[in-house]
Length: 109
Length: 430
Image (cartoon, each protein chain N blue to C red):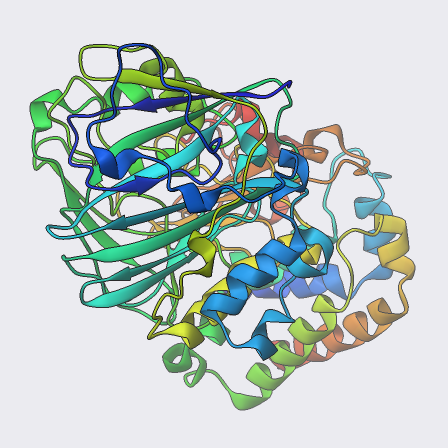
């Protein structure tokens, strides 16, 4: 698992201001989206592969695993079909941000 | 009448028996042409008193009926197709062969092939096992169980809401299964390893077929890509496109089946390739002969009433749930090109779905940094380069690459670099 990539992904998921700027196309030098953020966090980092593998999953700390599973669960509740604006404003997104922030803190300890 | 169907039969192939369900009760034979033998005749019992129009032919109730045969009733009720996702028209074929692993396949060959396989499902009961198929609109099949040689029965149902009104063709070709469907080797990957070989590599034209333009309905090209002419075999882990599929269920394109290549036909493209087969098979040749032209209303058949012994119904249901309850029911229909392995992906790279439904990752197993992601895109995205399918590629150092192949100079390895979001139609593997 690539911890740096995971941290970058979580930083994106927990930062509403960043999302407003980058997901909505207000930055000229950066672009991203909800889907990309999920990919950054779970795919690019290898977290998804770790969680999906019993063997690999057992090798990470339980608190990280639990938080990751919770975050994944929350993310799946947000319909991809919504616009980026709607996603940012989605009630579940605050829980996502909180969960991502929590996980980020654990990783940075 | 409005609807015309042509049945093209390749008689020299090892076909032993066939019933074409959507044929007129009395097959109007072309003058001077005879069926190879009596077994080709359309059974009289396939003609109901009233023939429903094609568009109504296979409807939800038919689907339920099909499922009712193969699955317990309680499970039938959960069919997403039965609840409205299914077809207003369609095609059912049945085949029934004995001995030697020989078979045949009937399919609807029509230009709108992206929709031709909407709701494709089928079931094969093979000599030593059961293979259950269910597919989505692009014709992916999932298979579970071990297969073997011997006799088997098969049902195929093709549901589509958009069968062309004008001219359609049914091409019937011979098929010989000389490979085996292997059991899934890794429940985590849900990968199915298939192995096939052709009897005549010299005549194998799959490499030629690959040169055709990429077509929307071309998931099967992906499997063809892995055909190794030198060894005349395909050994490939099928891609995991089926997020949410039941554990232990693999996904198979069509590479388990190898067609008899005694003639000048490309092997391996088979019936599942209507868009490709048509220009090759539609004209009679010395080996492909048009036997009849069927016109008139489509009729339903009695073959569905035949109960098939299914020893492995529970995994079949899981398989069907995995597909039919997959991307489609999550509101995502994979766009053309997003289910094709991009040209240039090295052999052995792992293929997985992304954590959000719709994307596919190709990863170097020896260096996870090196990865290509194919994403569906979002038509409402504020960024033009991700309003349609796009690709993202990271090099061995984990840096995102731009369209020209140069690593992004932007922070965080180019994670947010607009130039590292490459429209799929302009993407080249670097």
